[in-house]
Length: 304
Image 1 (spheres, rainbow, N blue to C red):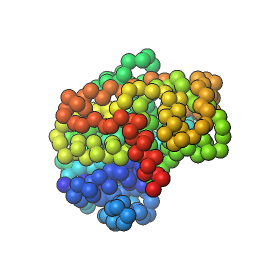
Image 2: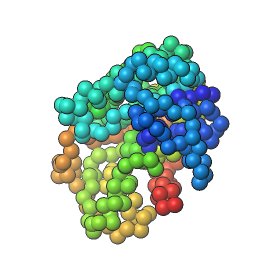
Image 3: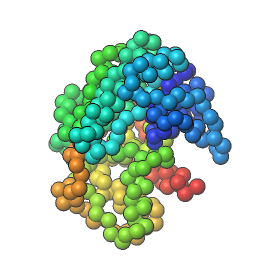
Image 4: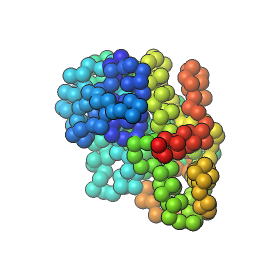
């Protein structure tokens, strides 16, 4: 299978390329950068086909994907700086990438009659209540610019295509980039005490585990909306920080605080990021491992 992957310079796109390569698929990477480091093949690095691409440019998208004639596109590229998205000077770019950029890709996939898998987010929901959000729930009310832009991307995909997957994820961490786990480890080295929010509830997603699931999906025809995070129940950021320090052997004290007490963030965050993942099992997909196990494997990876 020929698979075109956007956003390969990020955490998820990096791992998706690795997974495709491991399974013997032809993976073509793209990102806005001029060059791509390649995939990890043990201790060696294997160069794969790569196209520098700005997804906000409709003509460039049509040329790049059209020239490759893929069987599937996995669209990982996105503006993910949630707080910066709130700044007036950035909003046009946020929508150009997350909303219109996704539409450009969906239009080409429609013309080529190829599958498309779009990565979305828990931020398309307003975060109210305590019940887990079902993937087919239509009660969308994003509370920040990032969430609204990603929802527009979802709608473009579902309106234009029949052969599509929309996969919502949350609290992402991986080897190729910044994330909450790395931040906690860095902070824990410098300070004896850390304040962490305790009233936002969800579940982490390890990109190495998610990449395996995404390739499972594009090898299938079980189209539709899905939620995918690691298993192990719903937790707070405070709970996650405590487990990170426990596994890392840090003595750092974690102080639970409310979102209001913590302050700082420009963008509103959803309190309820519980994502219902039962649809994965119903479709026959293998769920992601427990998030505690994922943290353990991640810590081992970044030590090597």
